[in-house]
Amino acid sequence: MYRHLGKATILTATFILLVSYGFSQDSRFTIKLKTQSLVIGSKITLGDIAQVQVKDKADQSRLCTVILSDSPPPGEAKELSMNFILRKVKEAGYKPDAIIFTGPKIVRITAAQVDVYKIIIYEDVT
Image (cartoon, rainbow, N blue to C red; front, side, top):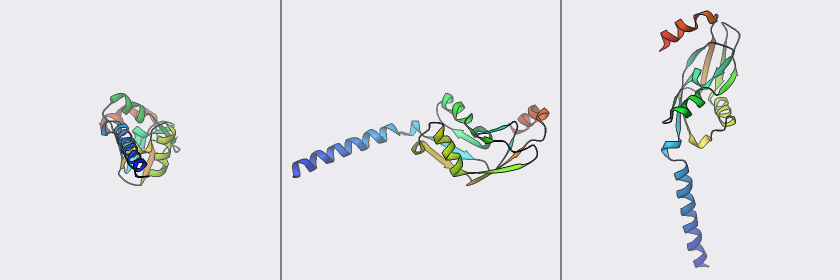
């Protein structure tokens, strides 16, 4: 009986090492939610409402383009919760264990009134 316990312990330790290696710091990413955000266009993306920090630039651009919801009507606002955002990121194929969320639990999103000012707003924000 004790012989099997030793093998089970070794297998468990090996499994934990493999799992922790799979979720190393390189595969994790941080999503820092903004308190408020101004959205231009008909869709709200993760990049509109958060700063996404990940080492790989390709992963960062994919994460920033994850569509979360339809935009509210021009000039109006909408709120998205952290749990809703997490669910949408999971639906996009990302593992919740790899996500570190920071920021408020609710993000308030306001839709821009006119698309014409897109370039001016972008320049003011950056």
